[in-house]
Structure formats: C-alpha cells, structure tokens
Length: 416
Image (cartoon, rainbow, N blue to C red; front, side, top):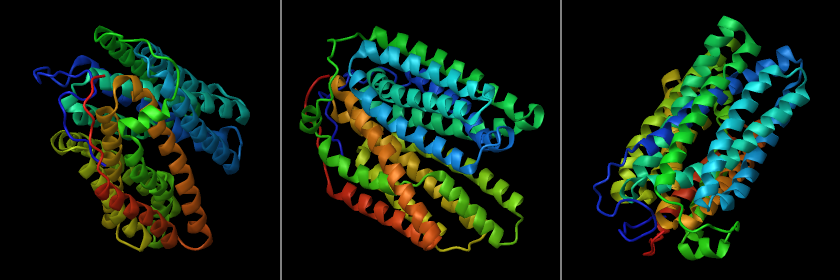
C-alpha cells in the first residue's frame, strides 16, 4: 500500500512546488472539521443522559438510534461519492451537508419524544456521510500534490481536536444550563463550520470547475487507477477498528477493579478518552509530514501496529492507570496515522474526476468495517471475555499490518 511520488500524477496541485500548502482554502476545511466535530460531540456527549433522564428512553433505544445512524453514514458516503466527482456539485454538497448537520444536531434539544431524536440524529449523520467525500475531494483540489499528507493531516487534526473540545464544552454547559439547553449550543460551532466550508468552496471555485462529470461510481476506473489492491489492508484495518465506546467500557471496568467507584471510574475513563483524541490530533499532523516524505504505506502500517500494542494492554488487564492511558494514546496514534494515510492515498492515486467515488468507497468500507468489527468484538467481550474480544481485534490489525507491508501500488502518470 503505497503511492510513489510523480509530478505528473493526478491532482491540481502546484507543479512548481512554489505555492504554500497551507492556503486559506486548506485552513478553512480544517476549521470546518474542528467546528463541526465540536458541535456534534456536544450533542453526542449529552445524548445518553438526554434520552434516558429527560425523555425516559432506554439504553436499547440509544443503541438502536446510534447503530442506525452509523449505518446511514456509511450508506450516505457511498451515495455521495459519485456525486462529489463533479467539482461544482461537491461544493454545494459540502456546504449544505455541514449546515444540515448543524441544524439537525441542535434540534435534538427540542425533541419531546425518542422517535424525534431518532429522526434528527439520522438526518444529521446522513448529512455527515454525504458531505464527507465532497469535502475530501475539495481538499484534494485545493492542496498542492506534494503536501497531500500535511493537508489531510491538518484536517484530521481539526476533527480530533473537536472531539476534545466538544465533550469538555458539554460538561460545562450541562453544569451551567442543564442537559436540554446544552444541546442547543451545538448550533453555534455547527454554523461556524458551515461558514468555514463555504469559504473553502469559494476558494475551490477559483481553481476552476473542469469538465462536468456524470453521476456514476465507475468501479472499473477506480480499479484501473490502482485503488483495488490497497483496499485489502484498509478493509482488514477497519474490521479491527473498534468503536471507542468499547475502549471506554473496558477502561471503566479496569478502574473499578482497582477500587474506584463507578462514577469515578467512568469520569476517569472519559478524561482519558479526551487524551486519546488529543494524541490523534497531534499524530495526524506529524504523520501528514511523514506521508509527504515517504508515502502513505509506512504510516498506515505504523497505525495498524500501534493498535496491536494498545489492544494488548486492554486485553491483558488489570493494569495501572498509566498503562490504560498509554493504551488509549496508542489507539489515538493508530487512528491518527491510518485515517490520514487513507485519505492521502486516495488523493495521490486518483484523478480529480474519480476522487469523489474513491473517498465514498473508503468511507463505506470504514463504516461497514467498524460496525462488523465492533459487533463481533462486543459479542466476544460479553459472552467469552474482554481478553478474547480485544485479541480478536488485534488479529485483524496484525493482518492489516502484514498486508500494508506486502502490497505496493504505484501511481500511474496522469493529470486530473
């Protein structure tokens, strides 16, 4: 899984290498990811209490809402991918997707019944899915080819930093105003995200629209361009990429086993989860620079390998608090490395008229793999033991590491 540098390869970047990579457009997309993730993480952090304490719903209803919403995100990414192949259409999709996500997320705070929450959450998450390939394709058109790693690393860092700020803001808002009003405040960062992506869309328009593209997946074109082979280690990785809620659950139980109360254990686990996101943000930036020097294969392999180490700590508890913190940090580094590498890979090997479809396929693989991996690991966790559940996930990561070392996919010479 690699992409060799080729100055004539796909992209709209600067062939001279004189253009600064951190342009207003690239920075605006990173800001949009930060603000949007801050907003919906406020709602996500409060949602369990809102459903159970305010609307008197059940844990089962929360699970159904989150499961259906995550599935819709994956479907929306697959559908939105071919639509985002057209430069003009992708700008509208990105701007509209961010705005609908902001409004639907904040509107959850107005819900008076569980079914209303389900509809609004599904709408917000479907909008996230639709906008994702459009945003990534737009970022590929704005960033110089020589700096795809840094550009996508910055975008991923913005997203992960939002996942740190959002829960912390939610905790303060709940203490100050209460559960329902806290969700309303998600509108503010959400609107700021829509403004930022709108500015990026204006910058992308200056780069030209090119030839208008028909709406089609063009799987043959993706395979010919070289996306088929690197999908194998990506699929293997995503099957081992467990939902962070399972990591938080394991940490909470390990802390309780050390004598902490249930409340103290849960609070400590959530704080450590914030550290996980902070590490992911920092690694995304550093990893992006690494990609621009050596290509995405090594960074992706490193992401899979550090996940194996992190899962080993979770599997073989009990462990001291610092070891649990280290395990979360390793998982954060793994996702920071891998997600940046996956995005940079698509941008490097595909021409502009196929990038939307490519990002849609990657997004669909991520969503399906995460659901399948987490469901199986969760069943093993419950019916056998946490050790077996995490070793199952680690096995997928080892296979992904091996696949990413073996597979090499050169970039074909072409222009976008």
